[in-house]
Length: 279
Image (cartoon, rainbow, N blue to C red; front, top):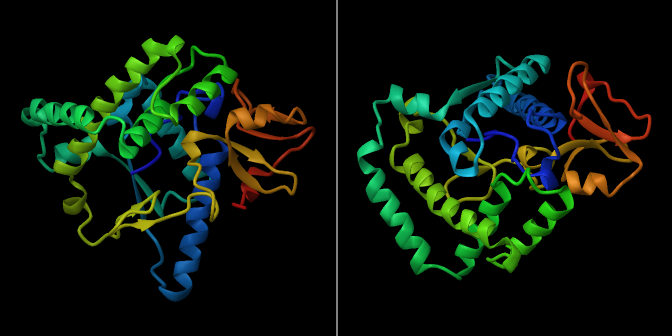
């Protein structure tokens, strides 16, 4: 489960709502992984990506139209990379419906469990981590980039400065709402029935799961939490938009017909997108 939408935070992704070079580099890494697997297992790799954006979007104040536009553009990147036969995309809620899994009757119970968790674990390391992660996903596009970055750094403590009391309340509400969504994912999970012989991969280390680096080994910043950039050695990587803004020698490069950068590079730098390779 991955690639839900560009996180609506200007400190992370700037004004971009569509996939960019960050997602393309991840796709190319998947292709590289497939080629490596094929050397020892000729059938190679078939990767099933499950978009969960439509399920969780309302928690973070992201519109469904934005989610669908992101997914459609991601599909264009797959075709551009020639990867559509080896990387297939699905919608989590569609899979639930096809499997006959309906969480509607359990929502009240799940919500009460989530509220109880919020009350009883408040202030613990796990609670603070959830606060930080939730704040990092929340829509903050109404804040200047520098202010949004300050909010993200403050969130690591588990609370925000007093002037952001209303935002802190939004984070609390989103923590509870996301815990409900996460419970729905796990209690009404169609993945086992849909892909009974698959290896379950994740983007972070978990017991019983295969963790994959999405861009290059040692970099945990996920493509939808950042922007694509070309570093000084010409390698593609993912950076926070705030980090890019701190380098005045880096400029955004737009694709024809688009009004936000597809990637950032040193002045006058251009990239052959067909030759993109992860660092």
